[in-house]
Image (tube, rainbow, N blue to C red; front, side, top):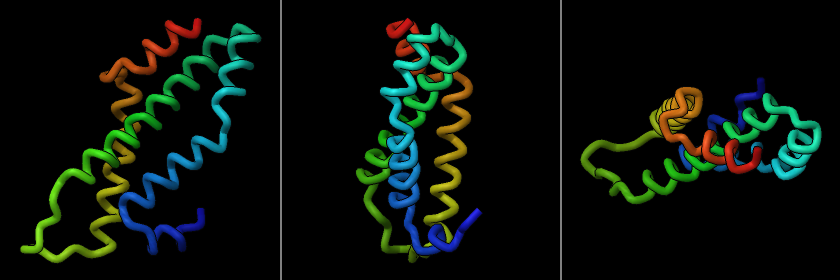
Length: 110
């Protein structure tokens, strides 16, 4: 795994990178193939990936609304750690179906 780019990235850049990676997978094609083949497992996985994208965007926008404190200086290491924590939270939230977006999307597409 190449981590050289991660060192230069801030929190929002890591999340944007994750979103762009998902967008490159072209979900419309994945959804269409899953629906055409009647592949419930692939459709469910695609819906979970869409939920992850939505949650990543939601977290990015929520963090943008929080004012930065000037009391404690920030550094890149902290930004990177926070972005990994966010990604782990998004992954776990998606697995636990606590938001229900993937389930609703799956039921709508099925």
